[in-house]
Length: 126
Image (cartoon, helix red, strand yellow):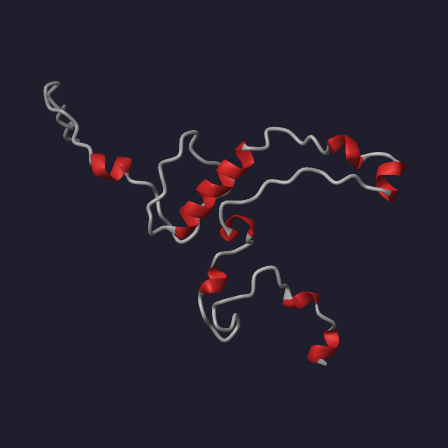
């Protein structure tokens, strides 16, 4: 069997630096882990901007100061009003950003903010 020729020590290994520095963009992104230092989101990538804004929102709340109000009978029958933090965009609190795509299922693609039609009585579909 022929032996593989060794590469001379002086020959550098080529790398595609533009690919290494570009943020990954895929149809779907993993949520189980992420790099410790995220790249800035491209202006045209709405999902990456949502992820970036979500991380910034989470960073403003390092601990849950409302936690003591979650225990005990008195807090159950008369819950205290806790603190809240406003999100930079409506995308941060949304479960999906694909609702803006018009289709027969989603309608015009301009859903009313804060309205969940599934909370309506079932008489509307009977």
